[in-house]
Image 1 (cartoon, rainbow, N blue to C red):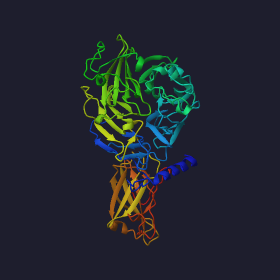
Image 2: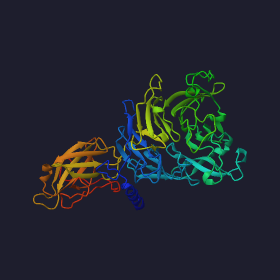
Image 3: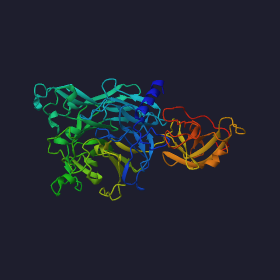
Image 4: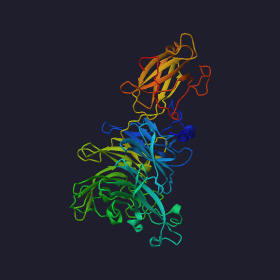
Length: 580
């Protein structure tokens, strides 16, 4: 990492230091959200950690979270990694991916326009040590926030919010209304930036089909262009075709990767499919046999995160997933009769039958929001395989509602069962996260482990943490005499060990045990992996009082707390004890 990146990390951490709430004694600069877990994880949750990017849902001095960032959490809400100092600006779409054979983290970083729901920036890729390995920006247009999806570990799909001069007269526009947003997507070579494909919503989606009408002042400037389409997800199948989600047309499109033509579209005003109730078969097109058609129908509205899941060998059957918001944000009111397809948001898995006459779309699974949550914006549904080609579970991020859930697909296909995990992303206030995921991850942090040692009641209490580490299994604590006292030299004394089971580990040792080294000594900690090998070591710190600013018992020695901004790689051996 260059000196400028290191300096930026220092400044980013310093800017947030005053806001920290001292959750961790060893890292007083960190103040991650405190998850409000209402349904603790059961044994049925998928393996892995939780990846979210919580940010405030409202402004003001008490907005939560205090430190918006990308976070990795355990199921119990314990922190694994805070991205403070690693990404710049607003952060979203944080997840694990594969790039050129390497497991990596990805995240969008840049600006956010909350009124119009877009932003500009770049996408960063970090390796397992959290070191940058790539930073993607389009060489042709400004990349926006909604999508970054790696294809075949080499290319990336990105979304571009492109204000464009346009004649809006046919759509009720006045003479001064001349700007529309073209939903652009590109496929780029990550390494070279080469443009491989570019598509435009205005080439196939008629603005007249928008569920978000042209309003009085909209479209008069490029900054307030009419966002008639609002492209918010892009996927690609093994045949080279693209799956697009147009939120403001309430439509999902399959578009040819060869010529850009629409192969089919689901939902909206010109659907290629008859939308069937959930329990019907493909020969039953009667959609009026339920007391509440909106709750039983495959109809949806203002969706996000459309994904290809499966296609039969002959292409006759396709299965897709998406997040059904069933609501529009207050900044994009709808005049469409389908502006609300359900009383709550949900994750949907839908099967498309291309051989039925007419073609049909039938819901296979639906996972409803606990407590009837309605995500007016954002959200996603991550389908986690069971290992046999079937759906194992679905991890759902409820977008603007600031919560995540996990649902297990039972053998009986009962999707109305209780979720196996549910949590709100901050107990302190209203937050939101654009997307959220569950992934396995092995983090090998390059940071120096942070340690502080404090005087207690005839004990020394040490607190140690290691931001981003998932490898260490045990901390071993040592004391070493300093100041050249007689018979002390550089003798290192093993104080004891404690299993690493959370972000911060606390260890106590009697004052008597450390005083054998004399009146002046330092404490340090060594991290061991599952094989008992040393993988990290803290700096050496003096013991200080537990009261900030209080008189020290070591004649002015302060604790040397080494934190995230020190990027030295662990490699020094510790001498003086055979256990090291």
